Length: 423
Image (cartoon, rainbow, N blue to C red):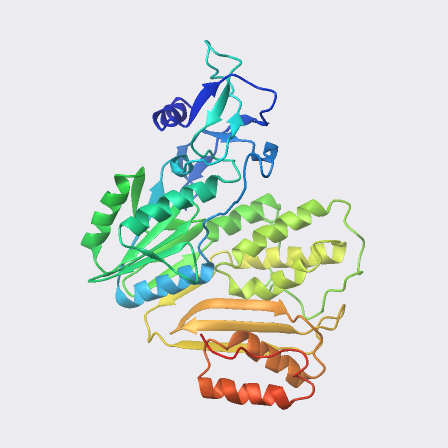
């Protein structure tokens, strides 16, 4: 706690001012997270002073918000390219990242509990820098890092605002997930120099080769990379009391889930929480994407039947905790596969599109999603799946042929169209 307060004082995070009735005061509190290694051992204990952002008022304490979160597809593509070319991959951590952001709004906060100024116990803190818990804190931090990277010659990707690249005599890529940074480059000496340059502006800590990122374990061998969420899976099974459950060889049955089957759960919060955990687990587990997609459709009114389906997924995870996503070397060509059922949902008779995209031999994107309207034939359902999956992969001549069919098909044309150009 003393270290945290020292860091706050060193960066001049606030100034003590007299309280006023016109101030919308934001409360503060201490949180004590425990940072763990991938094997579950404790890395370090942390103490952090955070603001209770739910006390903020829009237009008074904050205006715009934004959280720098790199897209999962971006991360998988970059890791595939890095493995293909044997590039350097390192992981960076920014100590008290949000404290580097400057506030443009007036925010007043109570003094830290237990560490009030004895000379001014009734004064409040006028914040000059962002603090964890404030709604605009991630945006303020992103703006500081964004400006620093631009000054070093990086550019922001038009497809992903949390992805930065610099290509000159060497190729260097950075993607950001809030305050976690992954650096990829084909010139290790320049990567070391870049870390030093960033360290002069921020409290950067080089964690070495990428090994544990956002709950994802990264195991690298000479020819490949393996991403898994074994610890995350084990923690989920422990939270749901399913560690001793009987394992199942598949995540779902062939039976479709129906909206009003079973009895409504008296406490649906637990159901929603578990499904939220499962959604994040699909980051490295495409094998449960369809099953998770099914149980996500009943979050508004889950029943005992839906909960049974969730437990079936958990029992499958009990049997396969070490499954993950391999990344191998291979020819870096793009391929895509898609399929669709017809009127497969018994509740609204909409079809479900399933798709997956590969960069070489590496799976980089997958999806299981219901179509927006009811398809009136199996052909229409398949064309919808094709149109959703492949515009960025198809040759212009193929797009033209497909568009011509859709423009003349009386069953397909009223419902959807393809873009004029493949970007």
